[in-house]
Length: 304
Image 1 (cartoon, rainbow, N blue to C red):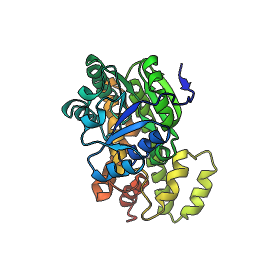
Image 2: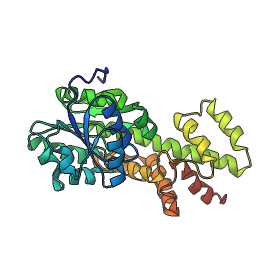
Image 3: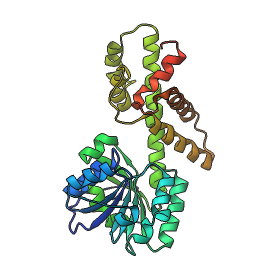
Image 4: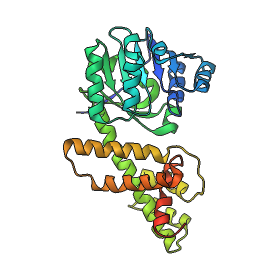
């Protein structure tokens, strides 16, 4: 049975090492600071460290420096390879205090998370697999949904930090990798919903139906979805602001398909959606907002 963890006050805040101060990581670190945690953060970009310092944090010179003596090391990096490098090649795990906890919040393949957890635990540290949903908006607002997997006592020990980052913390299982699998299922639905919304709006555009009229009808009908309501208006903009890039779904749907291969599960809709995001990225639009997967449909349909 899944348990939603109630918010608690941070109590004795402790020290947190934070690796990955990107579009989501930096606001997450700021939220930790606002809740009384001492944060030492590291990012390859010097400007990110400067922004952390402005918020009251301590920029670190390396991953090992960020982790040195910390109670908890949060990783908000791009992928499993970066997490592996941060922990082992760059000294993050050795610098973390004995008995400290690694919290991996990136979207990674479940099997890769399991392997990382095994190595972390073998080194005398604890591990929580805690991917997030909610994007940059949720990171800024502290309203992320956090899918935490690991022994209940370990998850409880980092609960105050997770509470500072999300409005919904769910303990999805006792074993690292289960959080990653829950996030994988989430991303399958998100990616397919965006792709099919783009396909529908492209069809409407092909026959000259006004996009505003179409969105008004779909948004109030049984065909609606959260992704349609959120991404649909941006699909009809030429250059919408970027809240989540096309290349993120190239990566995440790739993880979905990898997970499917590992357990021999057929995922045909995910595969087609992945191809459409790949096609969009291949057109040079990988850094565009993910709503712009509609450009690949328009190209297929001779709409530009």
